[in-house]
Image 1: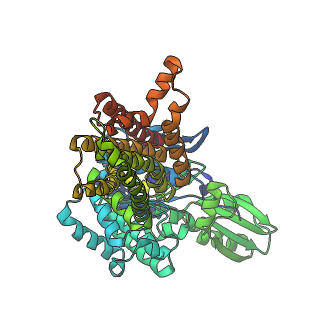
Image 2 (image 1 turned 30 degrees about the vertical axis):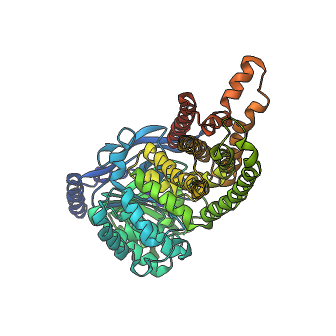
Image 3 (image 1 turned 45 degrees about the vertical axis):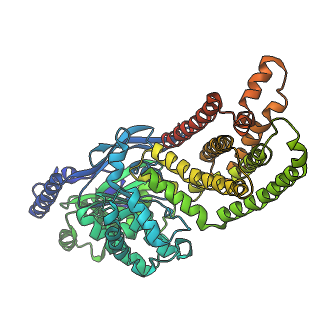
Length: 354
Length: 250
């Protein structure tokens, strides 16, 4: 299935792009203002993570190339990409586990290279494999993590109990982490990342290995954390991004392909094309003249595909035109593009995982 | 912060049977050797009395025993230190330390201190038997303490070398073999070096054992202390550099 043309454009179809030719449309203007308000409210909240053209080479191959983005407080950013796209490398750079070959990472205003301790104090990181000491019990482990994050001794117990409560670990405090199921181990990893209430929380594939109920719990926890923290989560599961994120970035082969709000992304997913079939052959030139139509292609005999602007619906106009011209419109359908399609189109890969 | 890491390291050793096995076996073997030394002493005691200025209990029992303990430490060091960093890297727990607000120096020193506590525990336990001689005789305290100092310095150096090797690899077994190789080489390096001019002397100087023996004879020499301190500090610095380099991908 081919895609709406819009989706072919890489990245950055932001508010400004859309408003160029659509200022006249009142419905659009209302939405534009709404967007603008959203954008302005976001500029007031604090930027907690900022990366400037970070690049990381492994030997001669660039695992991550020229990636720049920022995350503000109160935002959940989804980092989406197929396996091996550079997600984990990016997460590792954000968390200070590896340094970028060039570019810089700022966490809560602190440069990861020059003030690593201040930057690391502001973040909690759940790597792909939860970093558990297998011989320790959950309580011992979380106390150790709390100590590493310099939580004063007297507050450690409170911090540990709070983190356990949030991650649903209250029952397993005395168990050795090696004996926990994968789902529980993942939750201990999550508890470790939030025990010190860091402003920035980095989660690398947080729902891997969880059952559907646990996934739902973790997602709601992420949404909850997203209210007061800046959360960045990487995943290759598209529905996860839809369920928990405010903004999405798609990365492939180390390059950032798309960076937009979930709201914009969902609009792309909405119909931007109509399939119409007629009994008699229609005049393509006349259809192209319908307001809001960007292009018309003939799919097969008497069947056309109309690409239209995301904010208009030329259905009524087309029906009217068909009546006037006597083409005998017999079928009209919005063509739905899916997130999967956008993903596949942007990454240029075969089957997406989902 | 260093203390937190050190304490976890020390405790984790005892959460697996390895630490107990090491401590148990070292006691059994040292006890056997101790018995041998005491036996020998009792056999020649009668003849010793006839000598002017005869060697005492400390020279004939304590010093050889501490020497044995040193050799034994050399063999258990690879087992005790192999997991320090390699295992954390293998289990991906190193990420936890790297993401926490810690400097590489704190991580390395924490780990070093943790393993050092274990080594000092071994040293302390090996002293129990020599001290039991006090029940039936008396020992030369100066010589005894000098030997203990030597053994402590030796163990601190062995631990630092083991830690450095452990930072180099992801596999504990590789770290163990590497450490054993280096330590053994440093131990026997002067076998080929004796009496072959300046080159031989330099090689002999590198030998760990050549700096240990004077301590056992009750000879406190700053240059021997310096040898152990310099070697330990160098290994720790290299370990810190190594972890930093890993992060930078250099």
